[in-house]
Length: 147
Image (tube, rainbow, N blue to C red):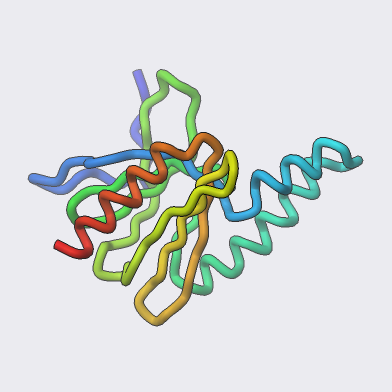
């Protein structure tokens, strides 16, 4: 039986998850590819994640891990750490929809990139390999923002 986590976010009454996706920091695919052929591969990817994290957090975008689980509801974007299949999903950070001005997804070969334009003009980018779910999540957010 999964244990409750003290920092886990719960869905509010009447709130339901509309779409989910796994995503990584922008540049994760390239960092992983370069790291495959380099000594200290883990450190190289971690260094690039830390640089992205500083920029994302300074823009007001909550970051929970280098590989995240995203979920969109009609009110907010939830973020959690990626867990192995079969384990309970736990969301520990949120970004309310009123903080997102625009979102767009673009395919770059095997990678789908998602750019979040936040209120204030900051842009935070995420990406996913086999990014169909991320592109769908972005489409749902776009509909919610324009509706």
